[in-house]
Length: 209
Picture 1 (cartoon, one colour):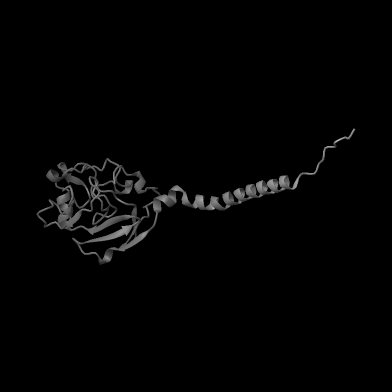
Picture 2: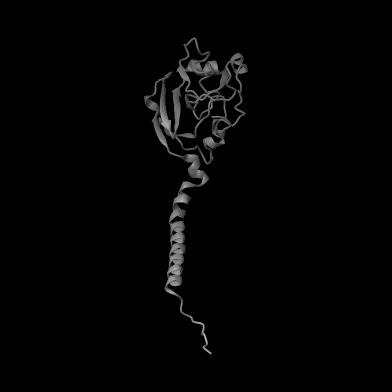
């Protein structure tokens, strides 16, 4: 009788399959290790998300009644220097009564801009220039324009009206224009994309944009 002894040697095909599997496993681990920093970078912490890209604006070059439009991230941002006439008209009781959200109760701005002028400095407006009703870019008007009661903005698409602080008061819009994170870092130097103080605020927090 011929005895068939079990062998510990594997066939060439088995060894080849094992090597393929082992190499693939090592490759998957290597790819995962290499991808983790990239994925981690794509998911930054709250402070980085709140800051985003920072754009500087020279306020000293901005004359009263004039506006400059800059682009921060993918948004047009209105930076306007309000006149004394604008500031006075914005606070008159009959006008305030017509505002859709006079107290800025809706989350359209950071806490440091929850005031009647919706900014850090009453002289300057810093607003995301996108109509909250239809997503068009509103046009800017000085205080002497017949189209705006106190100056401000009128949407060319839906005729929604916003005052120089971006507060909605006529038309279909019921949300104020969003206020981006901003800070006055030095006299005449505005930084858009950086928060004042320790607040972590980003446009992800607003109700309508």
